[in-house]
Image (cartoon, rainbow, N blue to C red; front, side, top):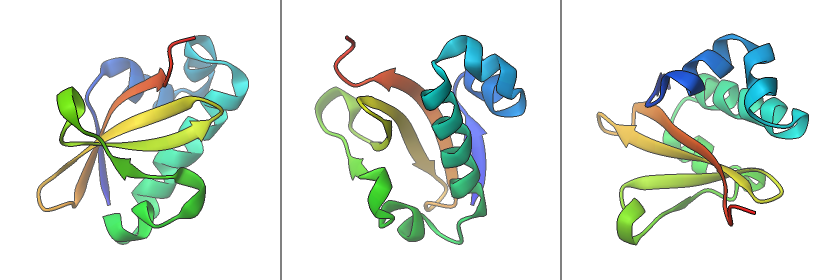
Length: 99
């Protein structure tokens, strides 16, 4: 799949792993990098969303149109699918409950 980034910080974190460590703790940074790489190598979104560790699901209400993928603990990455699900846009990494 093709990958794009909705925020420049997310793109920089993927390109420069040291920057990811400045944004998040080590576990979140490591999981973010491996998740984006997994999506990039996947043949289809179906392959990504059915991979059990991600607990991928569509969001509702004000986040309609986005998919949530578990990183670690309460941390998740929000992904938007574009162009018939061939382009995954990383939109946000956040603590689900903002603790």
